[in-house]
Image (tube, rainbow, N blue to C red; front, side, top):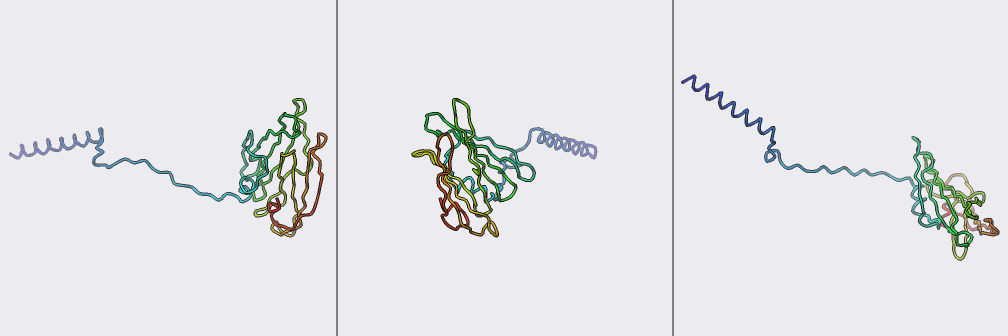
Length: 203
């Protein structure tokens, strides 16, 4: 009797072990619950104010670029962030000329844009950029901005003011008007137009 009881216990244990092994091999999803995909957490960040100004708040009149190349910044956030190319007819000869806008990151709030203007002369791009065709930005106020126009003919306007005490201290701004004349871009008018912090307000 005792021997039979021991045999039954051993058989029962073997059955239980076998059942557990089968569950491990096949899996028992009814007991473990539903499997659901994980949702990635949303990561938020604060964009630098200068980047917001350069890309969204101020329109330099060039429109959508025909090509954009993105650079890699160093560990300090410095370097060429992007190079945008615009093919526009500057001298109205029916042939696209080229304006290149280079966004230079400085690792702080003073990123800036450099412009290069090239005239297509018999298939050769000739640089006709006047001196000073670049912007100057502070954290909240731009000291120098450029806006291009193409109707009824090519024109460019620079509004610039000198740094005074701090980046946010208003100073007297000057307006420089440029036109295309004799295969050159020439400053045709300069005037004082107001005292501001952010020269974007004067365009």
